[in-house]
Length: 190
Image (cartoon, rainbow, N blue to C red; front, side):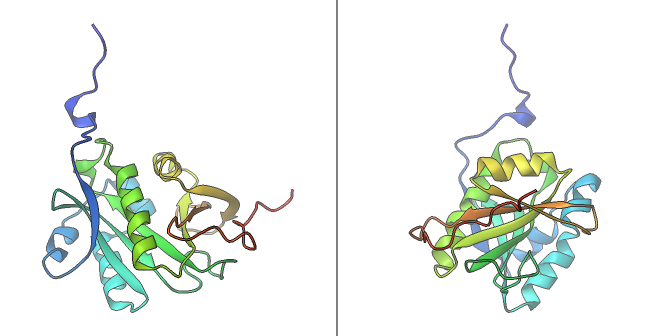
């Protein structure tokens, strides 16, 4: 008899995954999102991240939706030093506080949600060439999800995060033709 994934871990290819700005109708559902204690170390408090994004004119508070139901949250940051603390060679958006509610994890939605985020970011912010994020070196599940969605590891590590060193991952926004004069940052020579 072949092994079958448990229903909780089965992927559901028929579920539509999309994103939308958090508005008054979506805000209560975003505030109810939860992650495990171990994940909270990496993404922080959802309510704090939502409030911070809503009051920052250079941030977009975004909900992740499946068939109209809120299952996740992230923040897009348009500040020039977003995520890296310094400008990159190309205009970039910072992706921060990305999470899928722990009750929705294991269904194959994370990678699809990241792809929906990337597609939306490219459409809504056409002058930006890159989407940048940092992810804790110990957060192997998140690293794998971002890589499957098309992010590349820049080879640069950021030290001093609350949970330890973080990889800088970059995604080239596809709505822009490649600019050969500005390649993705390369890992420093060792």
